[in-house]
Image 1: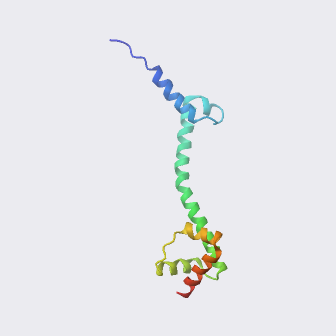
Image 2: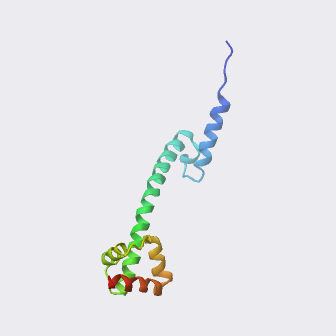
Image 3: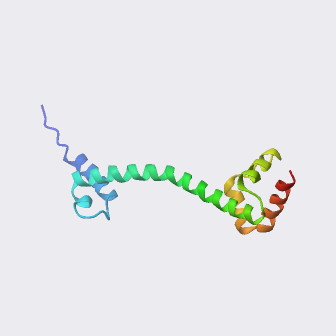
Length: 116
């Protein structure tokens, strides 16, 4: 039975992982075992962060819309409810963009919403 040498594959795997941990502090960047632990932890935080980002931005959009509504003497909840009853389907991101960059257009929407 001939002997199988596996050094090449292990080396490739280690190099691939160590390349991903470049810039980490101390042993976390150049010792395979420490680097793997740190990379798994970092990847878990990145996964969680991608989900939190969606929540954070939605909260930011709502805050911006609420501020614009208050300038037009309307509450956020009343504004959103009246948009829904008028079958206006603009998402919160676009509404916040309108509030920032096109305040006149947002004011017209708020005026329509307050009539309803």
